Amino acid sequence: REIDAAGGKALVHIGDVADAMAVQAMADAAVKQFGGIDILVNNAALRREKPFAEMDYAAWREILDVTLDGTFHCVKACLPGLRKSGAGTIVNIGGLSAHTGAKNRAHVVTAKAGIIGLTRALAHDLADDGITVNCVVPGLIGTPRPKDKPEPAHHLTHQTISGNRGRPVDVAATVRFLCGPGARYINGQAIHANGGAYLGA
Image (tube, rainbow, N blue to C red; front, side, top):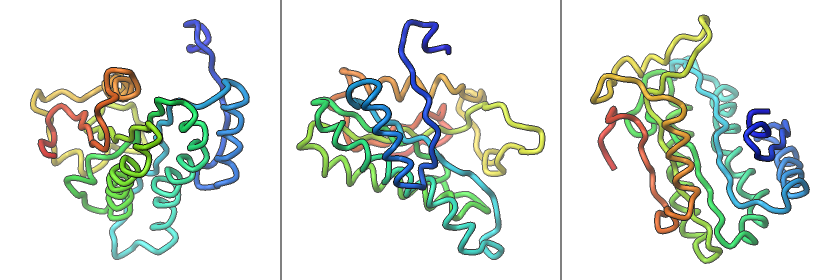
């Protein structure tokens, strides 16, 4: 409704990114509605906490199925449209813990680290199609959370340079830049939007 009110066009399509058929239906619906696909932002993720010693395989797979396999399914489903675009863009959303590590999040850290590797691999594989692939890595974003879901424990061990938490719009602005014409020479990169909470490559 907000997009429509601002003069844009929007389509809502519910689907489980861990289900390849559901993702294909989502991509098909987008092409039918808008005539093609120019931009794909992979933002689906689960962020649970559990000590590794207590983690069973089902808990491990649940995270990888959504975060990593979901990205695979979305790219595969959208690839024909992105190739036709002529200036296709994929932006994957990473995670601070993939670079710093985090206690009780072996599954989440592994999945988000995999996103970085997949970003770099796809940048090579899809360059000939004129598709750029980058990763935005948010960190310490002041997202409203339900009272029964406290802030992740690893956030308490990091601070931004200014002491302020970021806003969702700060992450969105970075994604928007990477999707625009001014970022066509940026490819295969992990761009950190974290206020200096992590300073590294």
